[in-house]
Image (tube, rainbow, N blue to C red; front, top):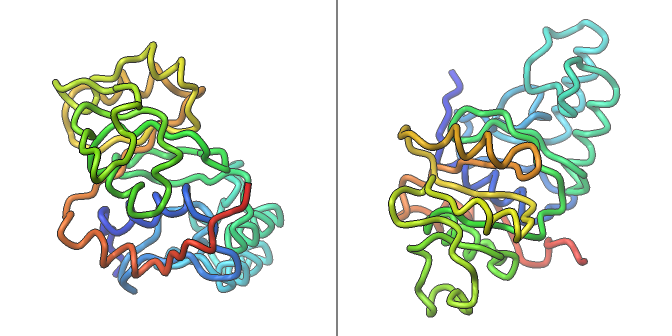
Length: 230
């Protein structure tokens, strides 16, 4: 039975926003996990050519439809979804629809060039993925100049009370492509989402085990040369 490992999925989702992976499957770390990205038609741990085949079989009524087969998230499974799956595999998709750590369905336009990081764990993940230079705003606790070079020059967008304590005007002035935040079941998330979306997609990522963060990033086979040239 497939399970949902929110930590590992968070790593993969963050990597998908920030790094292009041409010609390789996009995977989580373990075979018993479901990668909650629309395009993962067979609902396993990876988006690869098998998802194209599985989607084709759905269109021909040879397989039952799955929710994640609707890769372009238009409410039906069609040849257009096969195109989107192919683009995801090539790392050339213009948007990506996913289920985040708060069980919210979110569509993010790509490429993601401007990031507001609403939690220090999100900042650490972005840094480890080699995309710290895309961060334009931060939370109060992302403040270590050694770990985050130039962080003191970035405006603080999230206060010290909770990681949903966003400074809305500051965030809107920065015009980010995405607002990353750490998910916890506490008040404030709904207000955050209602204020920012649809202009700024809010994605909750739950990095619950920092001790294994680097190891799990390595399992995604992310490499610097796979970053899209801009």
